[in-house]
Amino acid sequence: MDAITDYERSSGMSHAAIVAARDVVLAQKTLTVAVLDGTTVPDIGVSPFIRRDDGLYIYTSHLAGHVQAVLAQKQACFMISVDESLTQNIWARHRLKFSAAVTEIPRDADDFHQLCDAFATAHGNVMGLIREFSDFHMLRIVPDKGVLVLGFAKAFCVENVGFDIVAHLSRA
Image (cartoon, rainbow, N blue to C red):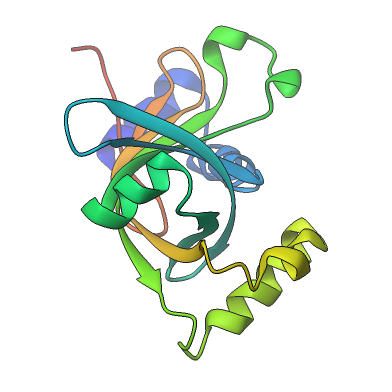
């Protein structure tokens, strides 16, 4: 916490303000997925997500190449960005990027239908239509570590499912 305390003194941005800004990023509705396709070619996609105490969840089709790669590798990199129309400076757009382990939640798992209901609540009635599509998979994303960017010289290392702020990134 010393790095954050030092940063609080030098910038005037309190730990509470950093956490509040992180929570605004996490309140977005979609995330970007980046993964290697099994060779050396990166693939990318966007998916709606929900957040629970044990991770983030996406419900997405294996017909998309990036989903096939995620299912095979069981890990990927992700980014959540604040809507650019709300950004005062496009170069300093608030965002959270992180690496994570990915596991599939089987359709017969106890919480599969609860997760589908949570998606419907968060993202609307389309979930009722795609819920039974056999090409769709419920994936749990368990973050490991990442970076929260809140502006120029306002980047923080984060860890774990809670995106705990552990350090201020300083100049290299």
